[in-house]
Length: 116
Image (cartoon, rainbow, N blue to C red; front, side):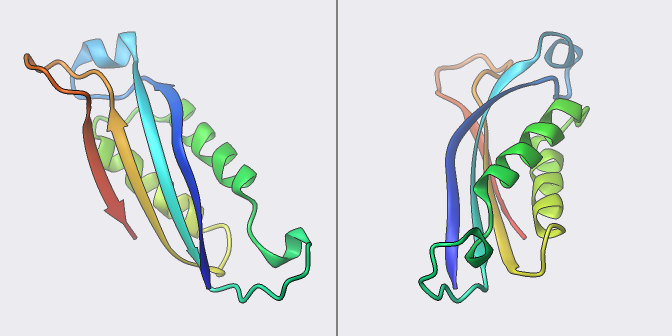
């Protein structure tokens, strides 16, 4: 068993509760951790693992098509979609950050963390 991680993916999305967020869009950062039940045999072959390229493309497609209001909904969709790719995935953890939100204050981002 081992984990595959992709860190700090950056996307432009048109999600959010406020109309301005859906019209103007916003920048998101996403980290994923995919836990597998593979027992790596040492063979240097893709059949021995899962493709992080496939995970990235899946996430990119979900975000480009999403009209979600909540980042929690987007994280849930990512988890559900990744887990549906193979029974070799035991868990998926998503960290999703909005870099600009319409809150008056000084901070870097808002973030949710979800595991499924």
